[in-house]
Amino acid sequence: MAHQVECQFSRDVSYKYRGGSWIIQGQSKRIQNKDGQLGTRSGAESGERRAEGYCAIQISQIMIQAVLVMNTQGKPRLAKFYDFRPPEKQQELIRSVFGVLSSRAENVSDFIEADSIFGPDTRLVYKHFATLYFVFVFDSSENELAMLDLIQVFVETLDKCFKNVCELDVVFNFNKMHTVLDEIIFGGQMLETSSTEVMKAVEEITKLEKASNTISLVPKSVSSWQAR
Image (cartoon, rainbow, N blue to C red; front, side, top):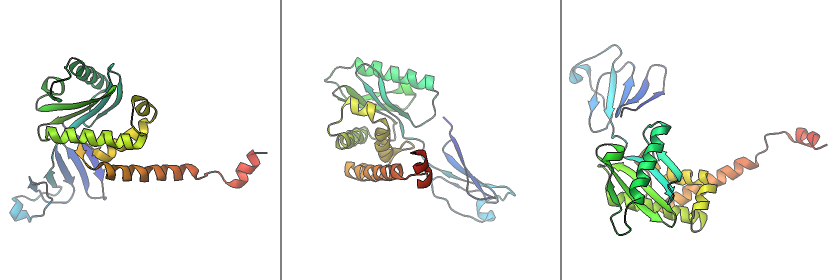
């Protein structure tokens, strides 16, 4: 699936992400670097020079495609897709995943080939805790055991946040759950594998949120007048 993101850093140069490549448009030379490193070459070395050329750097596609948390009745408590899918398609995928999970025995592997649900070369790993399924969907560039460990990091961090997390904690603290997940995975890429480090970041964010909530945006003279 092609993805496109545009960023304007200066008046003359803009950056676009399209289908796995960053395209830097502006007064530049053309370079294709498969190692993901941005370099420079002269016109003779690159083989061509254009008035409005571009540089392209290859970066990896999204590795983790989705993170799902659903209860044993199939009701989603968190659904985060890292590539664009219409809401109707997301609901269809969630139902398909639950159909597979609910039909599996307790003594089978936690790893599932997800080609029939998410497309070719995709896999699914899950863990069942109490009334919740934690599901990660990813492509073949990721290791199944690493994804299983990442689920454990996610759950351990939620346990630290809520003191033995349960389904009600997830329902009533939806924003914090997203904050924890964003510290572990961002844009389909794994950021942090240490529950301790994730907790430090979440605590800092919580402090900033509390500090911002205590700031009064109304002058004292106005607030005292309203209290009369």
